[in-house]
Image (cartoon, rainbow, N blue to C red; front, side, top):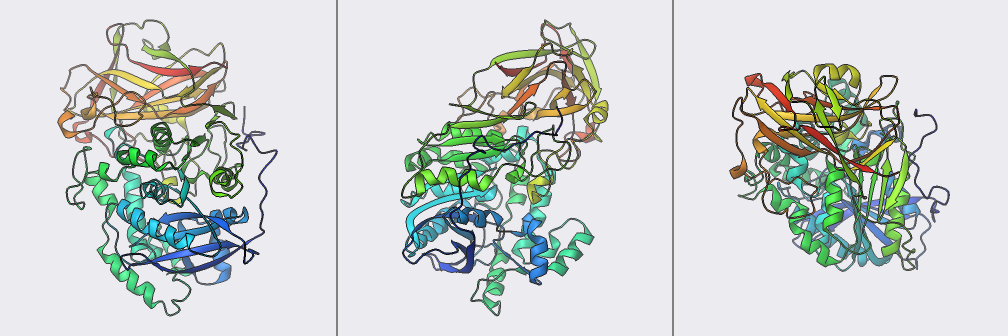
Amino acid sequence: MTSAGISDAPWWAPTPPRPQYSGCRRSSQYVTVSDGTKIAIDLFLPDGLGASDRVPTLITQTPYLRAVEFRNKVVEKLATKLVFLGTSDFAEECVRYGYAFVLMDLRGAGASFGHKGVGLMDDAVHDGSDVIDWIVAQPWSNGRVGATGVSAHGLCAEYLVTAKNDALKAIVPRFTAFDIYRSTHVGGALPIRFMVDIGSLLRAMDANQLHKMPEKRAARLLLRAMVKGLKPVDDDRDRSQLAAAVREHAGNEMFDKDLSSVEYRDDAMPSAHGATIDTQSPFTFAADMEAAGVPIYAYGGWLDASFARELISLHNTVRTPGSQLILGPWAHGGKFYSSPLVDKKRRTDFPHAAEIVRFFDRFLKTDPAPADDAPVHYFTMGSEQWKACASWPPPAVVTPLFLDAGRALTTATPAAGSDRYAVDFTAGTGVHSRFGKHLTTELFPVVYPGRAERDGQLLTFDSPPLDDDMEVTGHPVATLHVSSSATDGLFIVYLEDIAPDGTVRTVTDGWLRARYRKLAGAAPPYWHAPPYRTYNRADGAPLVPGEVTELVFDLFPTSWLFRRGHAVRVAIAGADKDNLAPVAQDQAPIMFVHRGPATPSRVELPVVSS
């Protein structure tokens, strides 16, 4: 199958919801919250809304910026594709379906006063709830509010549930985390590219030096020519209030620095007065979220960092009636159709705003729509089809593929032996893989280019061509029996599809830093696909050079159809120079992957019936 003729359009595409309005009116102002801090908001209302009409409201809280002031209208129109500049396309789309929309700068961000702490939760809960109270007091409000947003905005939506504000009726957190440690220290490895990129963006935004956001000098010069800076609210004509707010931002704490300094889950964040990352993780407050009774639509994409796994945990932990889960062929923000079968940059066919208002309509409209959808929808790549099920994961048969002699994969008992690999620290997945640059700009799809060539730097094992189609849907698990010359190491496993023409496509991947290998004896504090480890400092341990050690870790969840005649490849690496901080590079590790009846290194695949 090629990309010609395939689509990620939704299952309901033949009967889409119909917009009620043709446009919207946008205004901005300060809302003063209960402690006296002035919070900047943009308000979007349907164009043509009557004086007696009442509509529900959606709110997004951003720690970045809600709006940019351009040099002129022509430049503004040209810049609408630069999503990191806070464009309002999504809000405008939602408004056409009969909603008001409030886009809110968190305190310490954009044009809002105050300063940001490392933990956003307290401000998102306090200020967000106060702004909801302001919303429901407006003459156009029907008294019902929903919260949504991508990434940190989605985290704020999760936080806001714990405020237990009666007007908040539903949320749609999109492409975001549930366990912040697990999503930023995946397998104990630090996604250093993301940390560096997000840190530079935050510092430029908070100081109102937006031209410093791009990485390259030419892009900085272009941006300086295009934008004046942060956009003041409408009545701040001389920009004096904006200037005063930006001065207060000088006291902001930078969460990228705190996250990067933390090694173990129970390490204190330097700027958080002894608090750990878990004090900001929504999973810690799962009981409060469920007690609030707010339905949650966990909304994510297979290719988006580790967030598909996070949203699955959210959905399976906070079991509020009416909640749903969707997992599509998308990267961060869902702007691109990123299935490995799509061979060129391609916009999604999926109308996200329409799908999101379909969910909100059930809980926010006076005459709610019926609940006629399955709780879970997921997209199977390879067959390029939407599927539905009552719960995640769908029933599957765990099928092990063992590493065997001759760099083969087999379902039979493998031959005893080992394979030597000198870790190549020049190996990488490119800057547009799941932890690449799409996380900070949303301007790119996720791609793993040139895998056939890049696999030449890795240790690979291939199955024979498949006799039948094989759908893998769920959470693959890797078990490696390894020894190493080093006292630590990063062990990366790629699950790949080899087409008959030799094309190699990455299906999913995952990794573990060896010092975090100890499995927990207790149950996890939230729904967690096996295996589970604490990542606490007391459980950390170095490798003993030359000693055989078992490493068990999950790959990122996926849904992929291996076609008949295709082969399965397992590729093993010790570094991803493009995205992950190197581990034990100064020790030049030589690793051995052991196989055989006593040391059965393998990947276990959840195979579902057709």
